[in-house]
Image 1 (cartoon, rainbow, N blue to C red):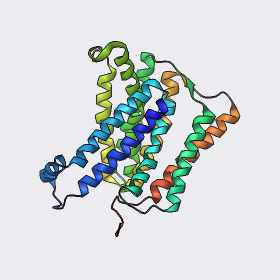
Image 2: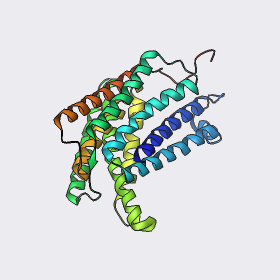
Image 3: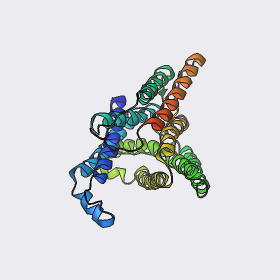
Image 4: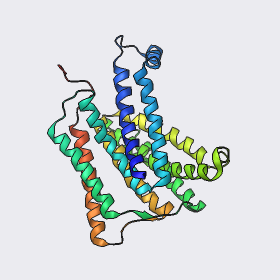
Length: 285
């Protein structure tokens, strides 16, 4: 069920991005500022995008509560594939054959990684020292990346800001898992007497801010691969460090899993570089 919930989270994320983008660009008056805000709040499609985003968070939380971080976070990469399907069959964009090939490569590499690596094990309660260490490493790492992103070309800045955001999102995934465990053990009221729910809010604000800056300062074709690839890499490292998750102790299988993960990353890069630059429907569609 963790796999199912992770895929539903990816689909919901893709639906949220697509619907809100279409809604925000459909204003016939090309409003800006508060006029645009008013238009969006009256647009059912834009509001549905927020529902889809909330559903994505809920599905991800369910997946992380019942599954392994090292499985759930890589599965969220399929958001790009779902988005491609929506762009073709809902927005009516022409998708090049090479892009479909990249989507297949992404899914195949992901499947090989999970099947060959066979993530397993883990425990629900990391030590306080491990939590503190992970928070410091990720927090300081994201801050350094954001500091380096203050100068340079738009592509350089977008890549660094996106890497900083992905670092926070990887830590955020482990905190979501801890929050759902607190909810299951102590109930809704008891959850608010524990630290994870507050760390979840802080991490969410920081990650959203860094991601929005990354999308603003440079091209999407640069920031998107970093957002999608850095997150699962760091999530896997954190899953081993915090929760003691592990992979099949077989050198040959681990090598195959590594090749699969590399193929997934290559597929993501090709997909993001060859997909249509905008979400506008093709003329005549």
